Image (cartoon, rainbow over all chains, first blue to last red; front, side):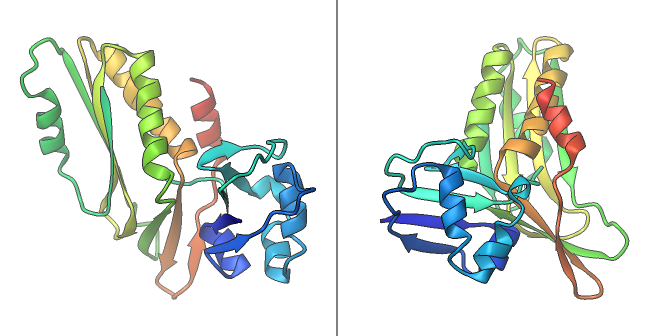
Length: 84
Length: 147
């Protein structure tokens, strides 16, 4: 079991700020996770359609599409940051 | 040591700077930068969303990086979250060094990295009732990459 968190317009498009999932065994990278998540609902698909506009954190550290997933507890999906 | 704080409450930059400098006589330069909510035409409010489990840790990592690059520089960074109004302060960076070059450089580095590496997202509210998420700017990425 792991926690998915969504922020900003990704949260609005997916329609929830978090969900608990069981990661399929064949999902071993961030890129594969995004491909799989995009099939969960039209909201997920719309939010993840343009990967250049998506940023990922795995267990609260920034990740890339190639980052391997080794039993992560928490993955966050969000737009490029705009603080400051 | 550069301390990081994440809060919804306003801050007083003069008080933060005075606390940073208290008891120190070896510092020749202090820099204070405040980022504000600019009242662009029709802007009613700006809401700063953040990632509670990660944002402060990321701010502390940025502060620690600056402390390694400028070891003789001390500082405090404060970033607010929540709904802010035009004229409100959003972010404060205060640095102090024996000489001004390091205080200026560390302050600029801290702001450039806060803007591009700390998980905050700005949502604008407009007078016509619409809202809009602020888009990240390439110019901010370029500013962060020069360090």
